[in-house]
Length: 128
Ligand code: I3S
Image 1 (tube, rainbow, N blue to C red):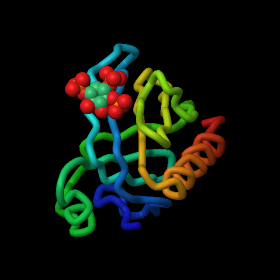
Image 2 (image 1 turned 180 degrees about the horizontal axis):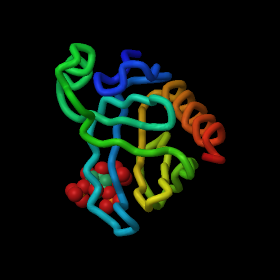
Image 3 (image 1 turned 120 degrees about the vertical axis):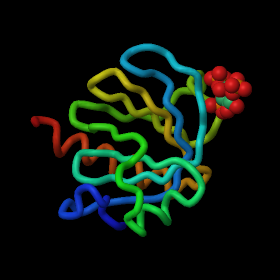
């Protein structure tokens, strides 16, 4: 994975395209808006860049900042219940500041790897 142009010295552990939607922002429910999203795990941050060609522009370095960043420290991940989404393989990510995201992939192995990586990151940074 390429590092983000903003933090070139922090290696990114994992990257890929996932389906992502926010469901809660600062504790308030927001309307779902699933979007195919270039997702990068870098240090204790999860970075998102939406839209067609976002991966390419990231690689090229002309995307100066991700569209959205989540601090994983103090957050949690679990498999989403059926009530949260009718889709298969959905991860529910909660942040310390009350943002909740759903993260999904149709591919079992892909979403399982992300679940593991996110859990490990949260555990590693638990006491920061
Ligand atoms: O939790 P909901 O409201 O059933 O979520 C669905 C809706 O957001 C729907 O959009 P609109 O109601 O804005 O048309 C989406 O198209 C669905 O994908 C959402 O549900 P899933 O179960 O796919 O997360």
